[in-house]
Amino acid sequence: MTAAALRFRRDALLARTAVAAQRPSTLKGRRAKALALSAYTDYARAGAKWAASGRARVAHRLLLAAADAKAAAAYARAGNRLLVTAGALLG
Image 1 (cartoon, helix red, strand yellow):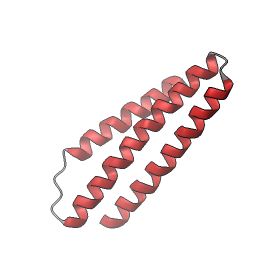
Image 2 (tube, rainbow, N blue to C red):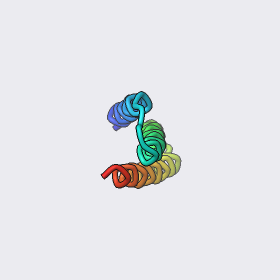
Image 3 (cartoon, helix red, strand yellow):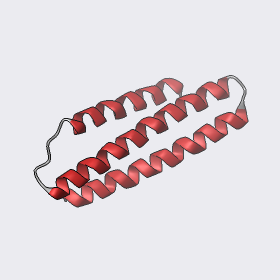
């Protein structure tokens, strides 16, 4: 679980780097880029929290694990909303 969460975080950071390198040509494109960057930042935070949750679970700190998992889910939902909004701007 922890290894998959760390891969998810790494992939989110790589995607954020790739989006940051793009140069939008329109105002909507600039807004979509900003939303996508925020989305991938939230995904990276979610991955970090999921990894922390896995480590806490292995250490038998179940309340901390549950709190980290809940925070990760909130970051993932926020990232999903932002990315869908960014796509709607461009679509």
